[in-house]
Image 1 (cartoon, rainbow, N blue to C red):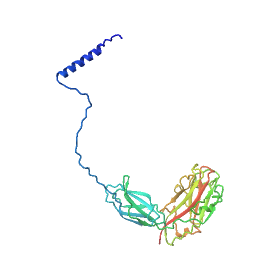
Image 2: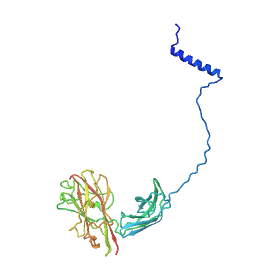
Image 3: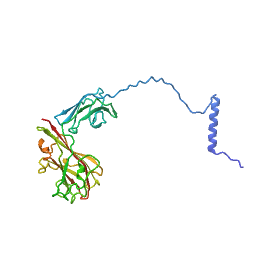
Image 4: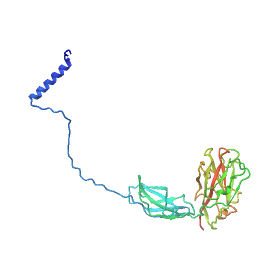
Length: 323
């Protein structure tokens, strides 16, 4: 093979390397190529960790406030960093409990339950909370707003004039008397679509004979109505309007959005109208709840006349102040 002459660049690099090595040997130096490693030692003192248990409030009591609401009072937690308290309720002593609200601030010591059902004894506990941490339950307290409890009707009748196709819940209407697996149905409700509770194109039905026994001289504080209801398809804005009568159906409370359910869905839901402090715009006397006087009327409304309305239970609960 022919000899190759080194390029001028290679010759220059070799010359530089030769000079460097010569200088190093002349100086008695020794070169070793290796990676640099740095080590050190440090003394770490023992770490000290402290723990804390989030304490619940103490001294919980439940009392009736103006015969209408349940007032909860307690002694604040000793943990001043707490966010506040969770309020839990059950209708069974010892739970299981459901959270119904919160009272914010570690120094808060009072809560009013305005959603308690009259005539039903409720059991309460509190939990202190901080961010995602909660304490154990506090002691339990209980109270009951004076009332009738949930009452079911024993009679019904379709409204047969100026009410859609005038047959109300024409399929097994008595099935709305109890909270069970059977239901009343109003198929293809009304003669035309309307979102008005006073429309004569929409079907209506009355329920009565609730068997109330309210002591004479009692003051009526409020009325709650419960509808367990749904429709075949949750479209066309289907709702149920509720009105109450105190004189056998001659006069009725005003139909308003507050007396109307939210849009019904295609699965059974519970809808609550009124409250323990809501008189529905009328000053009631105990005798107006007698079977001859008290009636409840439902109007099924929707933007279509093809919705099928279903009703499992129509219950009423009256809160009152005893004489």
